[in-house]
Image (cartoon, rainbow over all chains, first blue to last red; front, side, top):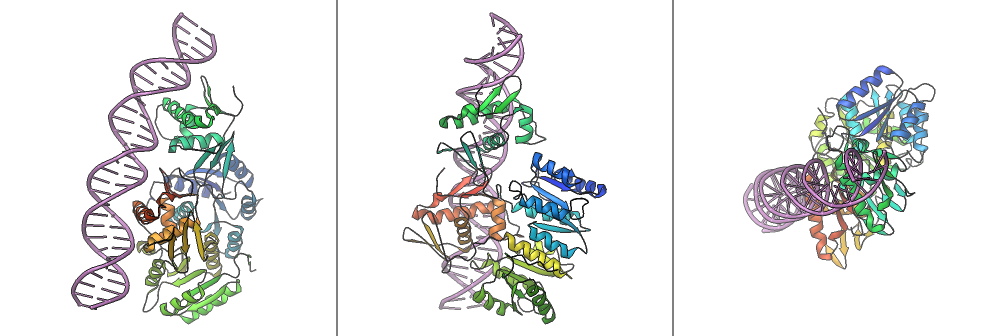
Length: 238
Length: 238
DNA sequence: GCCGACCTGTCACACCACTGTCATACTTGG
DNA sequence: CCAAGTATGACAGTGGTGTGACAGGTCGGC
């Protein structure tokens, strides 16, 4: 049974697991379900991936060398930036007592090995479903533009800014990745999705729509055109 | 080792189970974990206890004489007053998964017999953690809408507002979680229950019914549509 | 039991905001 | 000044949402 491809697909999961066979198995089964998988074989790699990709969910094996799964989980939940990313633990049968510890740390669910793919996917979907975007009243601010992620609202100078879905995603991406040029292709990948075939020029149009929406607040100049390359979101003009 | 997380201890659980040995076992293991246990051997006793103690969670056996666990679960979730109390089902092996899902109960999790105490405690903790603390407030007020939770009454501008059970729960949820976008899927999970399978568009219909009911008081614009995402309850228009 | 009042989930249809594309006007750098 | 790159306005198609209607279900009264 394949879980509905609607809102779950495209969600990214970070798998932290030291044993390669299991890691590969997880990658295979979860990618087939439409998830986007990143893997890490130890805590160090996981930290890197967290910072770079900010996955929607972390799947972590209890048994891990060096930094144990428990420690890493604790670390994750203690970090203000990542504590709202849901966490599922993989545990072996017989570690039941430890599971309680894990759950008290704040992990959202756990799955006992050996597990069926269906069960794992079901639990992942359940956790993802109840996760609210911007779980901890996340607010992004850049250049006088404030985004309330939980409410999906944008304000600037006390003015409420109304955006369509695509423009919102575009602005959200820009405010969280400022001061950096992105090509049209990169923007298509990160905002529209990986396997979508759309004219690159379409990006221009949405850039324009976003500028238009930001104009009343005088913030349209934050989006800068980099001729021959793409666009950049920046506070310093030029 | 027994882990007693501060936030978990003191939480009260109603155990509905007809077989005395299992009931005693559950009481023993859960009390040792710091929970406060009430027990009921049938649906009638459970109803009494619900009304009197209003437990934080209900643990119910699937197999029960007279009123089956299923029926009682459905009854619980249908009652506006108690539908927000999380519910965990005990099921025998072979009845798990699809069978439970197939019947549209809104239980928050289920545990398969035979289960270990640790697993049960872990799942209880997980469910309790994601339960919002604001469960038993007397009165809620938002945007000029007043809800008397105990009386299950809604007023605005001195006008009494008449709602069906579902609309009441929807409004109750919105008023206690304002200024946030919720997808249809999330609303289904949090208002109808976790393992309920209903068309997403049904949410639209109930939103409309709620808007219609709020219209005479001029409060229908508090429910805002966020195109492509879901709905938001907010005092500020736009 | 039978009936009516109420509630619920689903559907079909209508509507319109949003989307992607194009043609055209404009700008930039060599 | 030219060519390539970008901005802009217009436009038709799409898909998400609003809305009324309807069949089945539940509950209480008669």
